Length: 215
Image (cartoon, rainbow, N blue to C red; front, side, top):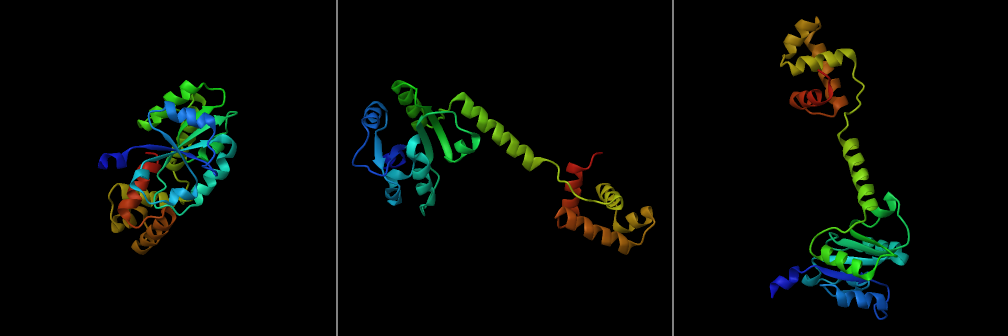
């Protein structure tokens, strides 16, 4: 019996569960997993049956309802979402509003397509239109590039020389002799380098130099 606790359950989020649209009832009958109505507040219910929930929203009231769900003090917010009856192409920011979006259906799509798509989501797959997939890929690629781009740091020419010497494995004394400066001056430069790079030691400074300084 415990296996049923891990079943992926589709829940239609609505402010009034007593009056479910006929469209949702027909959809529920044809999908492999019944679609149960639920209010945002009912998501607070501590039940093992709700551990793998998939929340289905109709676009018209989706933002308001989704915001209510987001604001709830839920133990886990690791839920997936399905958006139906979308009247137009959404912007990337609008798509991102819906969290872990697994499927999106435009209002012109036939019922059988919704059934197939929702069943695929229940089985752990995505069902997103090509335009939405393209938007999300572009967004996350940009995020990755932004987070992995070389850090711009205002290093002086002398500090870059010190970093080069660190890369070669030189000691403070060797650097002082090679650059014709006092060892205390080398230590002062290293302090400034560590501060600018936000690193704590020579190893981290060398790692930064290996990644960011052109050979």
